[in-house]
Length: 176
Image 1 (cartoon, rainbow, N blue to C red):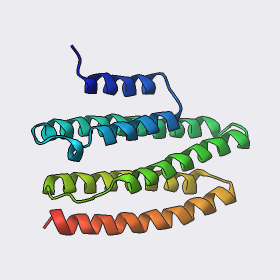
Image 2 (image 1 turned 180 degrees about the vertical axis):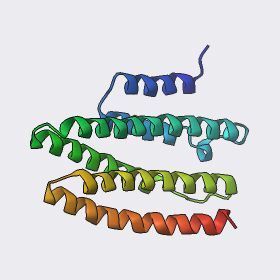
Image 3 (image 1 turned 90 degrees about the vertical axis):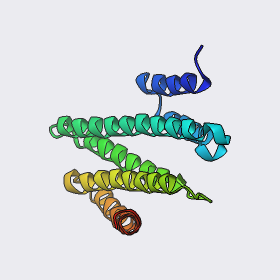
């Protein structure tokens, strides 16, 4: 008999395979993260819930990477396409970057005393911000629409500052 986690995890995987909307997948991903958060588990299941959380985050991060790759392929195809198609690809990339920033903001620290959990969350912060930075830099480099480039520059400046401060705090805490 399958555990409830296996059923939930498979449902997330199927949503990705069936190419449900980005917002549906993200909403379900966040729901699973809340449901299987180690802080909500009884003491005997904390390690199991940590393992579940890692699996969920890894699957979602693979999905995000696939989305970024798909958008990059779309850019390469759109190079000879009309400007409208190119703009749509850049707008998609801006949305991915924004969603990564939102995901960064949703990773809270709360009252966590476990150093490994704090380290893992810090690493997740850096992953989400790094993905957003990649997206914004691609828009700045490739896009020919001044409004999108300006918006990406402003967002990149803000996200880059957050990334730098998070990275220096991470290095100070864990790479001594």
